Amino acid sequence: MIETLLFYTIVITVGATAGVSLYGIVVKPHVVKKLVLLTVLSDAVNILVVLFGYYSKAVSPPVYPGGSLEGFVFPSSGELWDFSSVSVDPMPQVLIVTAIVIGLAELTFLSLITFKLGSLHKTLMFNRMEAEEE
Amino acid sequence: MSPLIILLLSAFSSVMALVATIKILYERDVLKTIIISGVESLFYSIILAAFLAPDLLIAYIAIGLGLNSAILLYALRGGERFEEAA
Image (cartoon, rainbow over all chains, first blue to last red; front, top):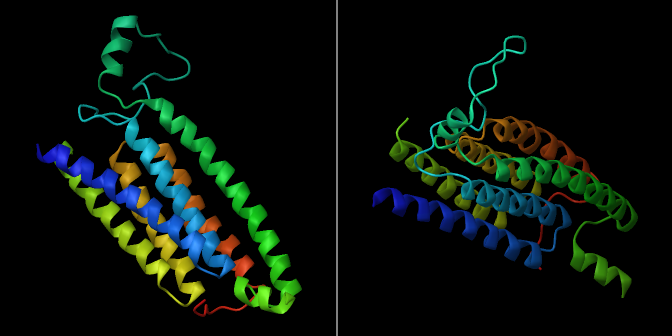
């Protein structure tokens, strides 16, 4: 009962973080603050996807224990079935590794554009840029 | 660790991350918001450790706390540091 309540607390607060950061991206005029909130938004969505792969009986990361490179014995299907009942789902984690790297590349590109914008307009506030153009 | 302790730790971390995001939203100094976003990323990596994703934990510590802050500081160098009300 209390575990379900705590899990819903986590999901609701992470979703609220995503909502607050989306509000900040739309409303705040400073470009670098928009970038910071964009990283927060992508973090929150990544955490939500990782939460989908967890279940309360899991005690192990999705890595098969034991076995060196030389003397590796392939486990039978029964052993693999037993292992999959105590480990978390690896599929969301694999997707999130890709998403983290893509987010880093996107942030690098956007910050380069921001730097050029700042040296062109001598400001990083959107409202001042609009006032300058008029 | 028992599942109850894991869930308690994760709930505390997610609430602290929400508090950090609201602090980012109302902070005037943009340099401080970059540092607070690093703290927020640290709380999310506690959640990743509790939910059994250690590979993502390593990537999050390096990227969220180190590389993102450095890249955003580079972007902030092109303009003013303090934000005014719209």
